[in-house]
Structure formats: C-alpha cells, structure tokens
Length: 198
Image (tube, rainbow, N blue to C red; front, side, top):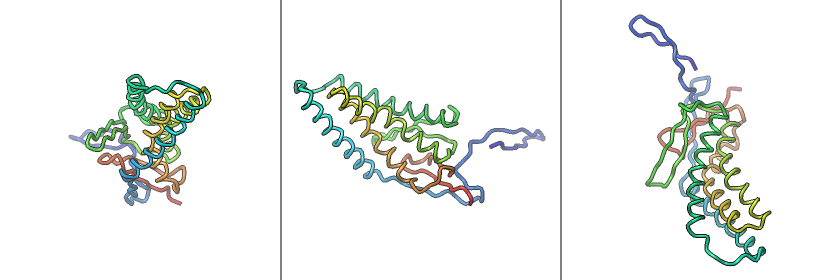
C-alpha cells in the first residue's frame, strides 16, 4: 500500500505493508491457538510417528539400537530448516524479505518466522504447511517406503514440530481463500483474520 507523506513542504510516497484490516475499517478478528493445544497436537503427532517408526524397525529386521547424537543433530538442523522453509514460503507467497521477522520465546520454547504483510488465506495456508510436508510428512513416507527406521523417526519428529502450524490452519478452516490473514507481532499464537467484504 502506498502512503503519501508531507514533511517540510516536500511530498513523498513510501510503501507500507498491508495489514489484516478489512476494507470497511473494522478491526481484524483475533484467533488464538492455545499453547496446551499445540503441545497436545505435537505429542499426538510425535507418538503416532514414533509408533510408525517402531513398526518399520520391527518389519525391517534392523538391529535394535538407539539413534543417539546423529539423529539429535539432524532434528536440530531440521528445526532450523523448518523456520527457513517458512521464510522461503513467505517470499514465494509474495512477501519481501524485509517484511519477515524471526521471533523466539525461550520461556515457551517457541521460535517462528512472522510477516509484517498480511497474506491471502490461501497463501497463509501454503506458508503454514510447507515445512510440515517437506521435512515431516515426506521423510516419514519415504522412511516407511524404504523401511528405514531413522528416516521414519526423523520425519515423525519434524511432523510433530509442525503441530502448531497445523492448528493455525485449523483455526482458519472457515475462512475463504481471499480473506486477509496477518500475524500478531506480539504473540506468535495469534493470527489476525479480516474477511473480504461480500
């Protein structure tokens, strides 16, 4: 959105990121995803994936060993890649790199990439789902197909890391694809929803 500014008798224009505000000026609806729900979703996905990984290990005849440090390192790298994929998806969806911001709440153990620019609901869903599909679901399915316990377990852990993203998509399940969705910069568990005028 272009903003016209006048300073000292000079007029200039500047770009201002679009916010999730409807055309009629009403404030956007705040939708919160509760932290306990994110934990529950992540645990459910993680346990389901772990059970699938155990079934893969049992069917493959692989020796029973603990994955240890290499898997831990891979998961930590995967968590960083998860946030980078969100950033890449934001850019693909039309945001500029300058619109992106990284937020970390150590107290909650939450990291996330936010965007100062509101997106259409269709694009927001894409941004939310990309890391879970690429780093979680795809390795999980590939691990099952290849009968690889470690790849399946890696996919399960990264799918569990996408629990909050899945809940954000669920929170806007009743929103049309052209509605405007924005991040609340003060709380990564809140999204701002502005429906398009009818």
